[in-house]
Image (cartoon, rainbow over all chains, first blue to last red):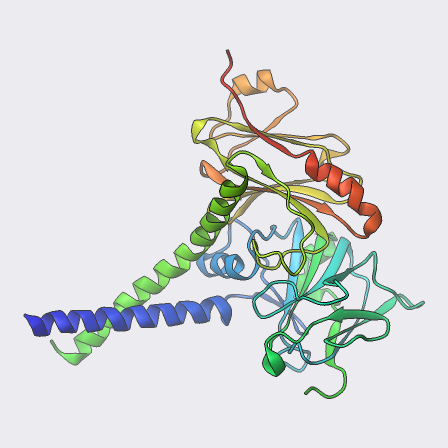
Length: 196
Length: 178
């Protein structure tokens, strides 16, 4: 009797551990992302009532109250163009051109998916305050220390290994972007200089 | 019990629990958010937080370019009317189900200069059409959820109109016709 109870308890504990661990992995490291453009990833069903179980849960954890794609498309980057994880302590250069949406922005978030404290109180750039080159291109530098031009501060949260998430929002995207998001030209993300 | 059977039972139980957690997460997170808003403003009442900064902790990945207004709706006692006056720039009102799904969205282009006038109701009601002829009826899937209004603040010049638009958001339970 006692042996059976102990076995049942062990089964329950192991099952709970496996369930919690696999759910955590699915929420923070897995999850369906059906569109990839360079370092950027998106899920076309984010926010939608048609979203599946995993998409809905992942969006709730990493971007609660997302709008559906017809209103807004969200491209997220947690890696650079070479697939290396973004780190807040490093400098990165984003290079691109204006995007075809009613308005768009690029925002930096810490590992906890909240805005990053910084003395400049600069948390994002949008199409209205980003400085463009005469040819229409832009260069944006992310990093903990002030940089000339468009600089998006990333602080030093989490030390050398602290992660960084970039989110590109396209509000009222152009019909071509909505129809074929994977063909949207998005900014490149490359390391700028050595990383501590 | 044979080890193979024990392993099969453990894995099956883990799979069921895993799916339960994944199902529960969006409902629990939305529920916690709704509880916090209700604690601050009450149900069916607009809350108007400041422009998000690094100190904002109510929702992950807030946009620092958007001024939000939020209303937790509860239709169990009857329909709720939502009115607002959009500013000149981008503005939207989005209805979310209690599981976090975005079930309805209307933006300033859709309104074409008209003020927002929505009635959240559990079922379309012709008597409401007669009482509020300019209001659009929206039936969310469940009686509770969240209405989120976003007003774009591209730069400091957009701040004052966005603040006025935010302050204009009203969520009001509709009293029965007397």
